[in-house]
Every structure is written in C-alpha cells, then in structure tokens.
Amino acid sequence: MTLPGGYSDTQSATPDVKTIAFQAKAATQTKLGKNYEKFKPISYRSQIVNGINYLIKVKTNDGYIHIKVYKSFQGTIEFKGIQEGQTSTSEINPF
Image (cartoon, rainbow, N blue to C red):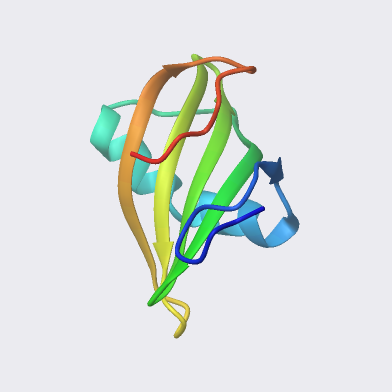
C-alpha cells in the first residue's frame, strides 16, 4: 500500500518508464563520465508530487544503477540523481 506522497511498490518497467529512462540516458552518462552500450530499464518506483518522481533500476554493461528522474505534468524530463553499485536484487530506495 502506498501512503499519500510516498513511493509506489516496485513494478516492472513499462514502455512509458523505459522512454523516460532513455531520455535521461545522456545526463546519466555525462554525470558518470561513461558511455553505456547497454542501458535497459528493469523496474521502478514512482512518487506523485507536483509531477512524478521515478526511481528506475537500469541494467548497464557495468552492472546495475538506480537513476532518479522527475517528469513534470507538462512532460518535461529532468535527471535528478544516480546510485551506482546496485545489483539485480537490491531494493530501489528513495535517494
């Protein structure tokens, strides 16, 4: 159960979430100074605020990362952060 303002349970990445992750790929690569050939969104959690925050688990050629992306209700995408050193089983926790 999701509390108002809280994050949803973890779900498999939908086509919309995959699109959002791919829109944040360049910012992710710039932040880390890496070029990912493999960038596959796996799962996510979301939080409705004045827009939607997404925490997305992504499989890369280096392993797994978690990215935080904000999408405004107008559709603007903004990269907000990253956590490296994740695994296929690590929980997606707010950061």
